[in-house]
Amino acid sequence: MTRKIILNLAMSIDGYIADEDGAFDWIVGDGDRSLDTENKWDYNEFLESIDIVVMGKKCYDQGFLDDFKDKTIYVATSEAIDDYDNIHFINNNICDVILEESKKEGKDIFLFGGGVLVDNFIKKNVIDQYIIGIIPTILGKGRPLFLEDNPKINLHLDQYILDNGIVILKYSKCGRV
Image (cartoon, rainbow, N blue to C red):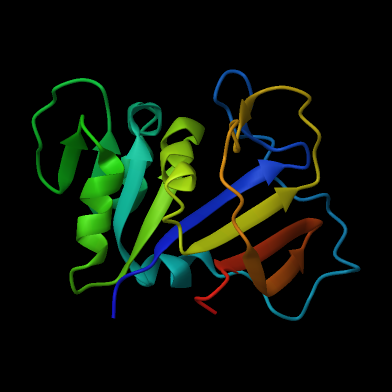
């Protein structure tokens, strides 16, 4: 069985994954738990199900790799940077590298971000599962999740969770339910 490539991130109601400065301190609930579902999202459980994390250079520069010390990390970059420890810098087609990794034995692959990196995977239609947390905030501007000229991708809603005003939607590509 092949590993799944899973996009898991939060976005504002108007589709942004970070504000203009790349900050994400707005990713919080609204404080109202009256509509919470019984099921809760367990991020730590999710992390246990993956062994590869893919991120862009901006995420790397912001220090997000520190959250994944026990994982293999692939960083998409236009620079020629030497690999070290568990971190691999890819300055060619990151999608091809990750697709090859997905054919090997192991846990699933976490497509962490940012938007330009994610766009490559969306355009190739190789994301198996989308886990999107909708934050009860309208940013008005920032870094969008979805860029232009994407293919039509039909998804199946596998699960929804409501927690503190945040709606978490878990979709799989149709045909891989």
